[in-house]
Length: 155
Image 1 (spheres, rainbow, N blue to C red):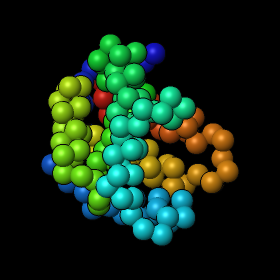
Image 2: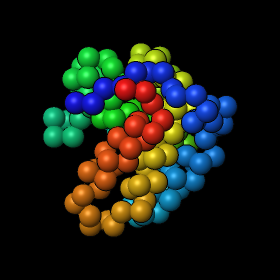
Image 3: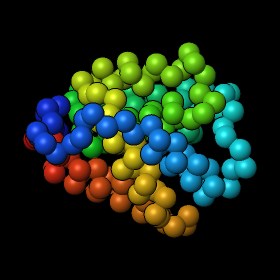
C-alpha cells in the first residue's frame, strides 16, 4: 500500500481556490449521466452516507474501513473515499446536521477542505468521462489518484 506524508509539495496545489462551483457542476452532470431527473432528497443523501446495508455500506463506513486499513495515514484509497464524502455532503439537499461530517473527517486525516475537494473533482471528473458500461472505472480512478499523489504529495 502506498502511503504519503500529509504535507503538500509547495506551489503545486492552489490551496486558496474554492471548488464549490466545480463540484456543483459535477453533481449536475453526474445526475444527468445517471438519469436522475432531480436532486437526491435529504433522506437519500443520509442513506448514501450512513447506510448499514452489508451489501452496500454507506460512504462513512467505507471511509472508516479504509482509514483503519491505512492506519489513519493519507493514501490514494483513503482519498478516493474522502472524495465520496465530499460529493455527498455537497449535494444540494444534504441535511444541515450531516454537512459538518466532511470537516471532521478532513481534520481526522489532517487535510484541508480544498484538498478534499480536489480529490472529489479528480474522482468524479474521471467517472464522467468513463462509459456507463466500463468495468474499469474504479481502476482508472485509483490510477489517477496515485498519479495525483506522486505529482502533488510527498512520499
